[in-house]
Picture (cartoon, one colour):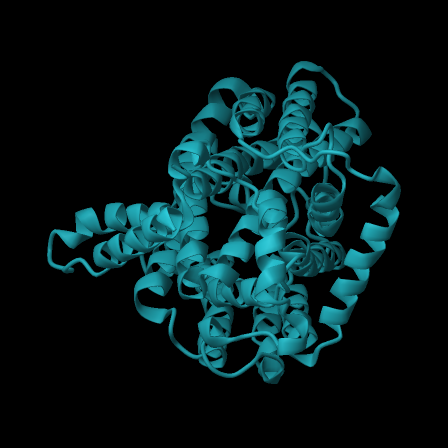
Length: 497
């Protein structure tokens, strides 16, 4: 009874804080009220986990890893742009098998714990893989790819756990689904902004291999989360039933995927990502070319990507404050259309049309990167909210990971398709004669998903609810909640008094 009263009081307090007057001071105090509201409703451990994994490990660490990997492949391994695209797809495979990591954490506890060991092991794997690339000189390309793949595996395993938290809280707090996705996106964008801002400087000072050494710090933080995590121990776990639990989870996911309200948006997510060919490696090599390109320095490349992070952050803020209640089809129509039109800025840059208007390359690239990332974030945010609503109770983490892996497979298709396009057009380390054609083809394909909008549901994503036959009862939810909650409060004994 006391616990119910405390919960009700916290909810009222959070509601009051959420309704604070939005005057001029709200520009400064608003984010603090927002964070406090989420911490009260979802508990501070959830907010801490999202910020740690999304903000520091994926945002900050991912920014360093991206710039470091770009220069590592170009200057250390000396591969062609089309080859770099293929290798980027290979190292991203761990993100496409996220449901496996989700199933492992859901049904296979280690030493009686479902979450803590996976956090600790993933962090250790990240530390070891980054140290291998950093310390071993003349590392063969094959072993470098294995180490990069292991590093991505470490990040993906940690990501699955927080995704499960987001999915479950989106079901128990449906009105906060958009807020939680905004928290994820904002943390990732802020971390990415900081990481990109200093990445070019570090690559210049200590080289790409030194940057991989720095990435051991975010990876170690993941292990720290596992050490500090308070989680009830599973006693007398029947390991003989693991195979059956895997089969049950697979059947539940298949049953959910067969529902038209689920597979149609999943098909749209894959196709919209797959047809938007990724030719970023070709553009990167052109950016740094001293003959045909603008010959950007390492520091400049880092600053350019940091402006992209600012654009992504602005997109998340714009969606949270103005667009989160708009109809899904309308949002996807305009963002997909703008995504294709915004790509024309790259075409103008490659054709050096900006110089005819007196606009320096750096300014034009910064504008293009910021606009592109902002539109990408606005396009992706409603799909994230919808994905969190598609998850049936009991397998939230695993099914959300499945949905994200579908998008990642689309990204792999896009990356390899872009690499094939660069190869066919003979775009190499030093030849960029037909890079403009690759950009034009990409831009045309970006608007093609407009023909597939009939696959997504009408209305705003916050109002979407799974069919009743896919939803478990309230009693089942309450029974499964302790097993599915990844970030249990470290002060739960105090709150329970």
